[in-house]
Length: 256
Image 1 (cartoon, rainbow, N blue to C red):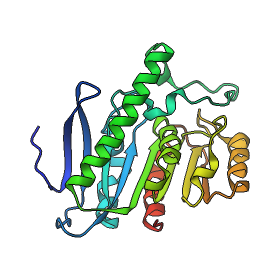
Image 2: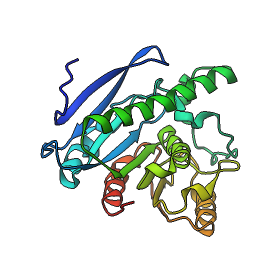
Image 3: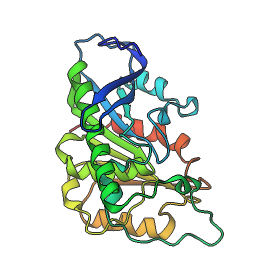
Image 4: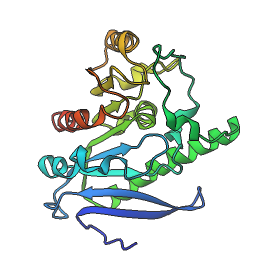
């Protein structure tokens, strides 16, 4: 695929991922007003399980118009594997029981049956791919490194919890959609001072309802700057269209 350095608009990109021994894709949108000199804020977005770097580029999410409006560069890595996990896949979580009659997420049936060692290696490479792509974009474009944001949905939300705390000094804010809560021994204090917007749908298969409210209260009690949005009648996927613009607007009002 052609790759024009410094190009604007919607672009499919790729680079050779040495440790992964593969050509790894990513997708980027750069506002058409970009002049190569003025530093722009950047959003790094993580897709859900079983998907790829095109996840947030659906027309119904309105991504291009929002990037043009607020002047963000938007980049979505593949993360090495569609179930890569971004490093978060091996973290221990509290087991949550589904509500009666609620079907599990069908994507889970396609998840590979890795050994613990294989899963750990895929998660390691997934995390590395994400951080590689961020470094590539920051090198190619004029990025305001004080305004770099991380967001994700589902598995990408879990990855946002994980990478958010691991690289806490990089992010101006975090956005987690349907990424659950409930990590065992999660280092809450590493997120002190980082604004978060967290959401789920009341008909979601991820953590929601009273369990999510309890986790939200725990985060608030720990002194975190967290905004929680629960979307009535929304499922795991239908919560994205109403929530995506809110996350972008939230980022636009927060600086590091």
